[in-house]
Length: 263
Image 1 (tube, rainbow, N blue to C red):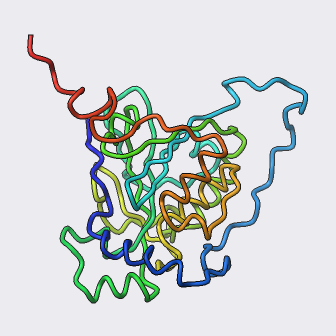
Image 2 (cartoon, one colour; image 1 turned 120 degrees about the vertical axis):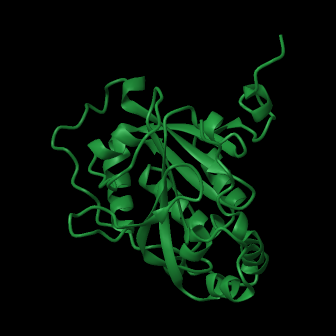
C-alpha cells in the first residue's frame, strides 16, 4: 500500500509567503480562475425530477488536504465513462477499487526532489510558470493510502461526471494520439505528471484548481476564498463534505493502526 507523502513540501515557504501577502492584494476573479470549457452537452434522456435518488445516483469524492495544499480523489472508471482522456501507462496497484488522486501545481516544484532555490521560489510566486497536473492511481481506501493528510468525503451526483471530465481534459496539453502529454513521474506513488496548459502564479495556485474541480462537481466556490486550503475546505464543508480522517495516527486509519499488533 502506498503512503501519501505531502506532495508540496518543497513549496511550503513559497506558499506561506503567498498566503501572507494575499490580504494585501485584490484578487480579481478573472485573474484567479483558469478558463473553463464550454458546458458539455447533457444526455437527451434525463431522470424524472420527481424520482427518489438512490445510492446508485451518487459517487464518493474525496478532498485531500495538508495545511497548505489540496487535491481531489475521484472514481477512475466514472471519469473515463464520462469522457475523461486518461494518460497512457496509468497502472493501478492490485486492490478492490480504482481511484485517482489529482492535483495541480508549479512544474519545477513537482519535478525536483530538493528544496527550491530562492530564484525558483520567486518565479513560482510572482512570475507565470509552467504547471503540471499530477494523477496518481490508487486501489485502496483513500483514507488509508493518504493517512498523513486530512480527508473529507462527499457524495455527488453521477451526472456531474461529464462536466468534471471536460474541465480535466481542458487542463492538459494533448499528444498526437489525443491523450494527455506525460512529462514525468508523480511526487509519490506510481503516478504521472501531465503537461498542463495553464500558467501557475499567485493567486492562481493549487487550491484554485481544486476549487474549480469542485465547481465541476456541482459545488459553488468563491475563488478568492479558495486560495488557502482551509478557505476552500470551509466552503466544501458547507456543501456536504464531511471530515472522515484527521491525518497521521489520529484515527484507526493511521500508520500506527496499520502495524501488526504483538501477540
